[in-house]
Amino acid sequence: MKKKKEKIKDRFETESWCYRVIGDPYQVLAEVFSHAEMPHFRKVISKLVHAAEAEEIYTKKSPCDVLLYMKIIRSLMEAAHVLKEKKTGPIEVSPGDISNKNYYCSNYQIATEWKDLPRFLSTKEFCNPYKAFRKFFRYKKLTEWLHDWEELVEAALSNNCGGLGLEMTKVHSCLVKLVEAGHLINVREVNHIDGRLKNRFLGS
Image (cartoon, rainbow, N blue to C red; front, side, top):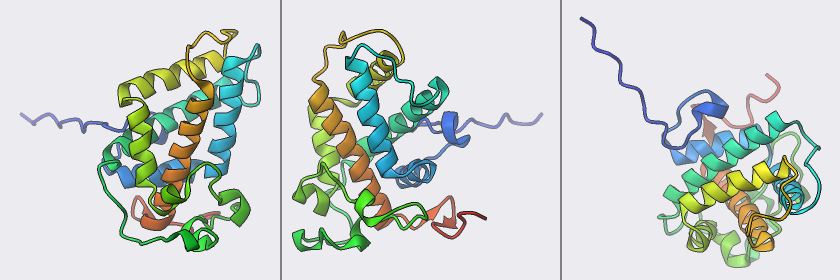
């Protein structure tokens, strides 16, 4: 009798949006930013936060696309929760390196130096994006973030106006910082996606 294959635990909940289980938090970052560029996530988050607290329904994208973004950001949160324990990355970045595109530009075909530049991170967080992860989870626990993010997205897709009880300005800033920090770590420390070198299979 054949032994039943044990199901791999989907700790970062990636199977629902990239159709495979990813156990490495750095590879979660790689997949997140291969699905969409950081400036795009930043823009979508801003639009969703605005819609969630206004008397309007988010209509820029289909509900299916919005729910996909919700799942991707959820996985990013879960990966960041693991990576926050790391004190610093292997690449030393100083305040004088902020204008050096090698430390922040993804070099994807649609990327530009101006769009890829973080807008919300402090200088210290730019130099060490793991600091932004730690601050993110000092503000709220992972379980609270996952709940509030789902509630925010649902509110943006409905007529539920302003009933979330969230500090929307702070929540917006934290979410964008999460994305920007993840982007920087991905640019500086991750050179492949599922074993394939980044930037060498676009358009193939």
